[in-house]
Length: 324
Image 1 (tube, rainbow, N blue to C red):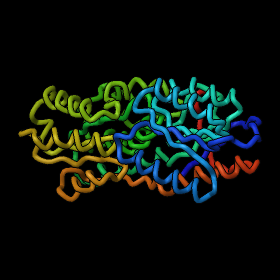
Image 2 (image 1 turned 90 degrees about the vertical axis):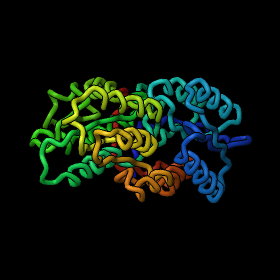
Image 3 (image 1 turned 180 degrees about the vertical axis):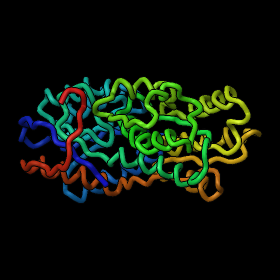
Image 4 (image 1 turned 90 degrees about the horizontal axis):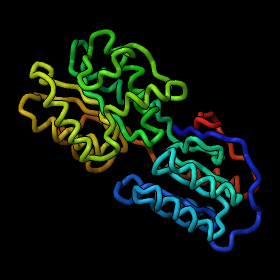
């Protein structure tokens, strides 16, 4: 499912772009997910008759800013941007807005600025619910199952929604005795309580800061090793693991799989990467959530089509980016 958010519109330059109508900026070439998006955007926009250019931030906010400036030199009318850092990207989109460009925040919400017009994303809270429910179903009827929790980067808005969704079901299961959280004392006072990413932002940031992988497989593996080294043997055995996405899931799974005191585990993921599908076949990863970028990109391109034809895109929900 896809959620699209509208912000207050401002006027944009109706003059035809001299070279490129739509600029698209994605975070990195190093993850299959973003290469899929690149291909989807190129095909969808070309089929719609628009000129476009895709650039990558290569995990650098400074490169991202340079990319925005380069696209503005090409007189883009619409900027579609998946932020490298949800907060730092505010400066880049402000430059676009100042140039009269309509800004669409793609997949990840840019926060702390009013220079965003639209947001198109998957229903990320529901992704987290699916991950959490998988763990609950896997251990139905059992009690005091050791539970390890990991999150994505706190510089990305999405992990707030992923984790809040997962905790909406896991928190109740912990309160009922099905699981015992092993690696996140910051959650102790929120057992059985929901966390709203739009309201409890600072609380969630503090919690996620203690279990973040920063979307980095090396960090994910290091944290997993540290967690296993710090707990007693009776809290290992058969364990449940909330991993935020497929690359970190594989890194964490490798650590738990190799540990002699871990007899078995259930671990979540998302993005349906081919490497993780192989892990699932081999029994080393339990599940993944497929977020179909072949649907998300055309939904974004429909917004672009409306904008370039002076129509208001259809939206169906609202998000809070901490400014509007």
